Length: 166
Image 1 (cartoon, rainbow, N blue to C red):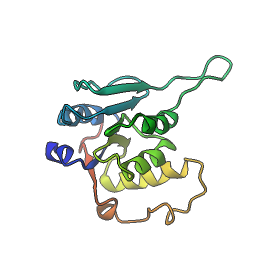
Image 2: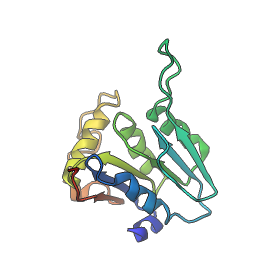
Image 3: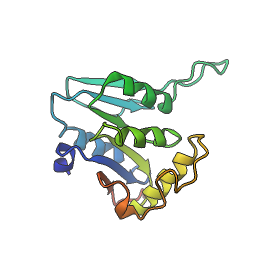
Image 4: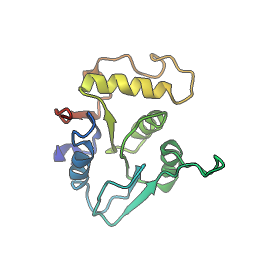
């Protein structure tokens, strides 16, 4: 798996709640070379990267009056302006999936993220659903989906933790 990180393959880690997705993401991130600029995006800081060129971004819930929210989607879009070599999103669970996939396919090779899904096939289906939540009126075929999981993104590796929460 560390060879996939070194080869700058995009990696999607899938699994159920408590299956070790974030732990695996932490381990994989340790294989990122020291000189690369990394942006991490999370709801709550769980990733523990030791590289010196890293930027940690966290979401912010809305204020009492409903303003001031900073979402993962907002952070993914803004991270692109920071010239990262890699983007690591702790977990995609909404419309930010589209932005993350676009980043992975437009020069941010070697990016990593997680998604809740029990099998690699379920992970692709989940991504399709999350892309539809992005607010764009895209049919699945136009969005580039509706492909068998083994053909989904020639440079994306889908790793399933293989465990379910007990």
